[in-house]
Length: 116
Image (cartoon, rainbow, N blue to C red; front, side):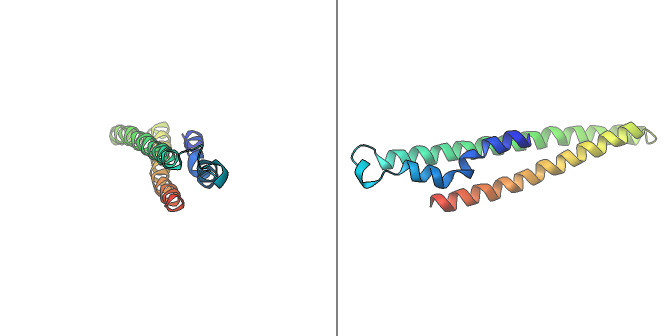
C-alpha cells in the first residue's frame, strides 16, 4: 500500500512543476486558457486527494476488522503464539495505516498552500 500511495502522491510531489507547466508564459497566453488549465489541475489534485484518503480509510477499516477478529480469537486461545504473532502484525499494520492518514493530511496541506 505504501508503494501505491507513493505513486499516487506524484501529483503533490510535483505541484510546483505542474504549476510552472500549466500557467502559460506571456508568449503562450493567447494559445492556452490559464483559467481552464488551472481548473483542471485543481480538479486533478482534488481527485487524487479524495482517492488516496478513500484507499487509506478503507485499509484502516479492513485492518481494524481483522484486528478485532484476532483479538476475539486470542481471548479464546491465549496460549496460541502464532495467533499472537498475527495479531501483533495486524496491529502494526493498522498503526501504519493510521499514520499514513496523518501523512496524507500534511501532503494535502502542503499542496494547497503551493496552489493558493
